[in-house]
Length: 313
Image (cartoon, rainbow, N blue to C red; front, side, top):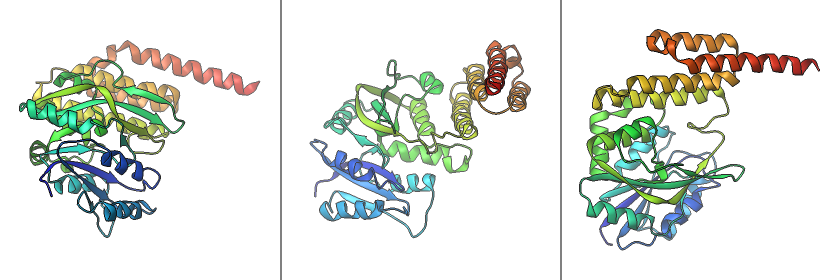
């Protein structure tokens, strides 16, 4: 067997409907080097493991499954699956996403081989929701600066290829397991890469990210939605303090404040809105001059009155 150049790290839990497409999309990749698929299966309650084992029996040299007797949770599953990778490079692919460009991995490895100072590269992705609606992400230019990533992560997990030695260095230095308040593992990882190496982009879609209604990053429950966005902001603030001398501190806090209040302008009571406003202003006094928060409050009052009048009809 050829030495593995790249490991596709595939974490999965209850992805019975999607896991076959994810695996097939890797097997169809056209590469001049050996690729392995490392599947971190976290005690699914559906047929995800059975499907993965069927593929492993067909491709025993290409597929390995990391399993345990009990559910370890998304963070530990992510970490143990990456730790089992043997390639010089790792590509990330959750069990409900899939690659679309046949030469995705070839293009990215060629870019990284030609640029030793580049720690990771990403591409555009297609986001597909459960209605079938599709959007391209990122919508604008493909950013490649640290400050741009602080503002908004352009690198969808399913599009990234990174140097495995740097991934291990990230885990050793940042120790994300000590930050249970961080509700995602990809943003802190890519921010670390952006701060400690160059990162580049290939300007074409190569993978699909499914936007599922119920997931850590997407929830119809407004409080969970706010908690996730707050977590993203707190991660960026952490990196801004350590690697950017707090250069975007006010901008990031303002964005965090406005995003939460935008959600609360549609959801929850007036008291909940005011409590969030008061908490944020107490933590960062300049937010008291933030005009957007007053406009959102006026909108909330308007909609509240409109709904009451509408219910009386």
